[in-house]
Length: 156
Image (cartoon, rainbow, N blue to C red; front, side, top):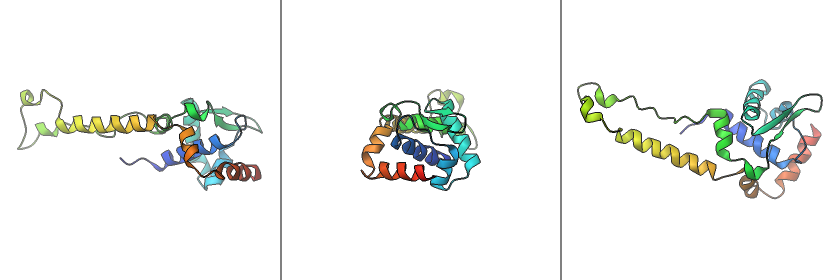
């Protein structure tokens, strides 16, 4: 499965917000600068995360984004689906009923074995992402990383 770069951006920005003080907001411009990303495009992703309830957005001179819930309550699946949606990347177009090798509709009453296997794989992938929270990610990063992140965001 190949996800767009914006998914990586969203996951990293969420992890970054999980490292700052709970009430602190970080602007889209700060996050774009932190990761050297195009600010207008990143802003669209951040808005999608706010719309999905992963982030909270605040307007004004001190406005920006922060996590809407504690890191332990935000899963990677919620972040990915906020950006990419929940649809399976595989679509069965029933090509088994086309061409010289076409099967009859009666022979295709049951779900295609390939479509079923791909659906199972997609569900396993979703379960795997649902089992990992931002708190789990924070546990996996170096212990010095949150202090560095807070320091660099304060400088901007």
